[in-house]
Each structure stands twice: as structure tokens, then as C-alpha cells.
Length: 639
Image (cartoon, rainbow, N blue to C red; front, side, top):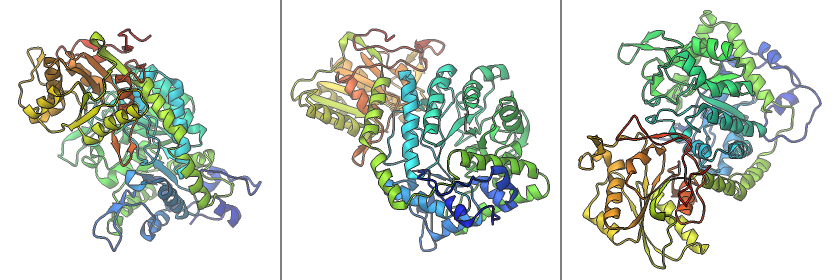
């Protein structure tokens, strides 16, 4: 256990939430260096591990379920392995009161050194809090060009996480999304322009830090120019170092210069930096080492050349890019040898039966240190940085811990409160980007009892449209209308669908595409290709063509990555909203669709400009909508 460094009362005072109150002692904390000197090797290794307890199966249960409250088994593992942190997922954070209780109990399980309790709360399509403020997401903020929106996003997220007892956020995303086929970043990125990514990413970082929340730059050295999702494969970025410094590395360098807390690595290969090969455990083939496991990337580039002195954390080590090609224990040892300070999700642990996975990783690291494969001096440096960050952000503190009751009261008042929701709605409106409005198709001005058909891939999306229209009616911004929702995921266009359009006065269709890949033949999109996998493009195109043939007013909303806008050159009205989450359990899960509907009906004005360029799908070397393009309702370019 941790040797006594100061009075027992002060040790207990370390068990603190991220909500400080009055000081109980004028005594100063020992330095991180002094703390490390009094720690055992086991305690040091524990600080460098951050597993998840996303799901758990107790001895009395037949299957793992979301861990929403602490149990003796998990508490025992936290203490036994001296864990330095944990990561939470949506399964762990169901509501505000429950989340506060869970984080409180996690900290109680670590009585000597408080935990880093982390989460991916980026805003937009990657959010974990089920009752928090969701925000429109980075690309929407990029479309608004607003530094204030970026800062306020970080600040409000930081404030809500702080109130919940979550002290570390894996945000902001500093990936420059310059590959339209990127399947994993897309709207999680601010832009394809490194300067815009830098300008807005720094503001989000500063907003988080203002609320004493640890911010994490990700995914270093850059995951924006990949066409492979590292959750499922091993992406490769082949640019030379000069190009990487100008584009991918630029936002990271500027954020490091501005005082970044933490950097998360990418499971991506960068041969210009490190072309060392290893034999894959998956198929025996030689593969290049990904950045997460590369000393040239982590130590030489990030720490020495770019001057980062904070904490380096891996992306989740259970992702297939790592898990399929490197052994569980080997990957963790390789990451630490490369210069990483914290191994995130180093081993799957869902019950005491699978504790062995964590034990094996722990022991592998210990053996590597005892055999001098990893130098003790490196371990000491990593742990010192981790503890120093905990001190800097008030996680280790001499301040009196707040009672659970006070935490719950504050969090209940703060998380997802009305002013936060209003802020996210305003941001979403400012990001809506109008790309086409031929013949003044917009705004729609329906007469009483007009029929409006709402089409989108999923029911929660059509529900978001319906609820928004009902709200506009209630606010007397539009007349009372009839609504016909239709979810078309995995469906083909039919006579019944055509009848819905024929009976409609207005048609609103959402397009949701991750990687845009329509069937193109002889320079045109081929609508005759019978491929059920192409429904995401084929169905809304069929709706568009039917609506035009019936002379119906129709608009298409791009709900995710805006590159699918190129599929609808024939559309009269087209806009990008940069967010696809709909309405469920009595709440909007993202403000983007409602903001898009408000623009469609003239209750709000489009103000966004494209933060990326949209290439033509029929002429791939041509740009259809350039970076910075965006119209007002009169069809004029927004300046």
C-alpha cells in the first residue's frame, strides 16, 4: 500500500470529488515526485492502467449487464490493482443521480489516490451521458466558424462532467477530416482545414480546462485521412513528414503549445515516421507498427520533437487494429515501452472469472520492469506526470470532500439544465448549411391541414422531425398540418411509398450515409442498380425523383457526413445539419434535426458555411460544393 506521506486525515482528504469546497488544512500537498518515491511498483503500475467496467456479471448473474452501481467485486479489483483510473460508457451513466453515486463509489474504492474517471463526451454523435447536454458536434461548430460556440461547448460539458464526478474528458478531436471516405471521424472533426480545426479545438480545450476538467487531444498523430475504422482494422496514412507537419500535426502542436493536459494516441500506421514491422498474430503477415505502439511516434516525435510534457493515453487497446494483430499483454507492454503513460482498456474484464485478463496484463508489465525491459525511471516519470495532472486539476487536493447528498443536489440542478439546452439549440441553428434553394423552395409555408411526409432512415429521426413540427405549430410559427412519418432503412422504394408522396403537399427527406458510395456508371448515378446495400442512397434519390415528377415541394437534409449532398444534384432544396441522432425517451438526443426543420419552415435562418469541400460523385476530381460555401434563404452566398 502507499506509504504514509502525511497525516491520515489528509490522506482521507484526497478522496475528493471534482467539486471543491473550503480548505480544511493549510498544509501543502507533497509533490508528485515525493509521492512516487513512496509508492511500490504495484502501485505505480496500477496508476498506468485505465480499464472499463462497462458491463459486469456478478456471481449471482447469468450474463453481463451495464454497471450502474458499485458492487464489492468491482470495488475489490480497483483496490487490488491500485488502478489509476477507469473509463465510463453509456451503459454506466444512465441518469444524473445514479451517475453521481457510481463515481462517488468508484472514488471510495481508491482511498489513497483518487481515480481519473474518464469518458468520451465529445458532443454531437459521440456522447455517453444519457441525460446530459448533447450539443450539435464539432463539424456543426466548424460550419458556424464560432470560437464562442467551441469554447462554450467545452465549458458546459466540463461543468456537467465535473458535477457528475467525471474529471477527464477524451475531447477535443483534433483530427483534420480531409478524407471524405473516413468512416470513423467525419462530423467528429471540426473541418478539413487544419487552421480551423486548431482555432476551434483550442477553444474547446480551454473551455474544459476552465471547469477543471482534464482535456485530451485525439487521435495523435491524426486519424482524419483514413478510409479504415481502427475499431475494425489497421488504417494507414502514407503522407510524408513535411505534409504531416503542415496538416495532421499542426493542430496538435498548437494545442500542446497552449498547455494541453493529455494526448490520446491513434491506432494508425505512419510509415513516414516509423516503418518498423512486426509479425501479425492474426495472419502471420508483417505489418507496420501503429502509432500507439511506436517509440518513434510517442517518445521521439510527440515528447521530444513537439515538446509535449503531459500525459499520453492510448486509444482503447481492445480495438481490432490492436487486438487482432498484437497479443493483449504484448500490446500493453509495447505501448508503455513506446512512451505511453496510461493504457486505456488494456484487458476485457466483465466478471471475476475474467479477472485473469487484467492480472495477466498487470503481471506482464511488472515482469517487463523487473527484467529491465522497461526502465524503472520511465515508470517513475509516467506516474509522476499522472499524479501531477491529478494535483493540477484538483483531483488530488487538501480540500474537504463534498458529501454525496450535496453532489447529487448540484448535479441534478446543473446537468442538462434549460440554459444549457438553449445554448446547444442556438449552436445547432448557427451551423445549418443551406446548399441549394432553387426557385425559393424554402421556406415551406404550409396551409392548414396540408400533408407533410417525413422520411428518414430511422424512426427516432422521423420522430425528431414530428416533435419539432408539433412544437412549431404550438408556437404558431406554422399552421396546423398533418404529419406522415416513414422510416426507410433497409427498404426499397415501392408503389406504397410513391403513393405517400403523391398524397403529400410537402416532402422532407433525411439522408444518412457514413461512407458515400453511390452506384455510378458512365458519369451518372445509376438508379437502376438493384443492390439492397445501396438503400441509403437509392431510397432518398427515388423519393427526390418521384417528388419532382409529381411537382411536390421537397427538401433533402444530409444528416451526417455532408459528402452525401453530392448524391442529390437534381434536388431543388438541400441542406446539411451534421447530426443524425433523433428523439427518444422524451428527449432530443441531438439538436441538429430540430434546427434543420426550423430552417426549412423559416423559423430560423441558415448561417453555416461548409467546413469541408464536397467532391462530385460523378466527376470525382471535381469539387461540387467548395469549402466555405453556404447560402441564405434568398440564395445568396453567406459571407
